[in-house]
Length: 321
Image 1 (cartoon, rainbow, N blue to C red):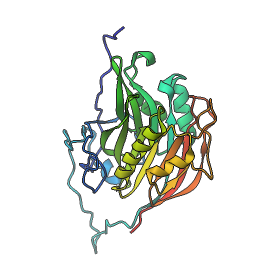
Image 2 (cartoon, rainbow, N blue to C red):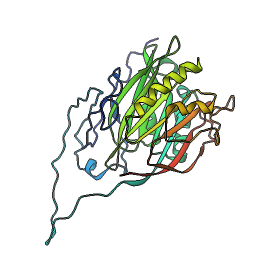
Image 3 (tube, helix red, strand yellow):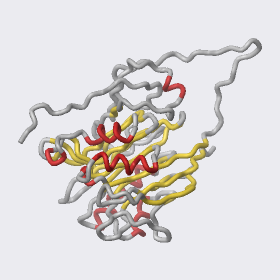
Image 4 (tube, rainbow, N blue to C red):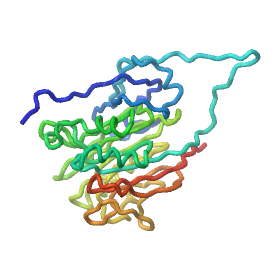
């Protein structure tokens, strides 16, 4: 049965000052020619994680960003200069060094309840989390916009959804929730053979003034060779990025296969793995990062909110010269 009054994607007011018009990786030519338009949305949540430059924008700013690099309703205040009696204060900053908590969670289309999922997320309060098996306006999940609802419940001001397939009257795919501004977002379809269609969501996230490429994906379960092909396609995109983080359910039963991603560091790997899929005690959920990330701690949440456990890792991120 169709719902007569479905929710629609609504852009709420958001404070944004930096916009990078990128479709694959920040500071590089587009690496994927088949990216499709996607939108960045914001919740009503406010956060102290936003940069001071972002906070200078007015509350009436509304942002709609697509992978084609267009934006509407953007108001960026000109920089202001503060003077002392004797000299101009320097606004230059040194290389960024900060802690970042990343996480990934397959939410099983919210079957165990979004409140339960939000509580699991808040337990470790990641700065950025990738979500898999996410519904938007699907009948089975009560026609709920799950990324928007989870952003509100878990306290994230920025979020974006990457569609993999249409599901009835709704959509199904992956999402990113972030405490830092998402400056652009695009979706790249992945070769999926005759199985369920898969995609790669890509956000450029402004972390204290530095753009970091953040990816989320959910790979095919039907074929190992197909998963490897998908990982190799993703690896090509990652290789063009300066700093990146990839989160997702890779559906890979062989932990050695994750090396096809070409990442600099893997949280789940052959010599140290965390079980994330409850039913078969497998390590199929992953966080993969580039240079600049040093793991401080990691683990899984034992809160039962899905058939997967949330994998998280705390990093020291240091910008390299």
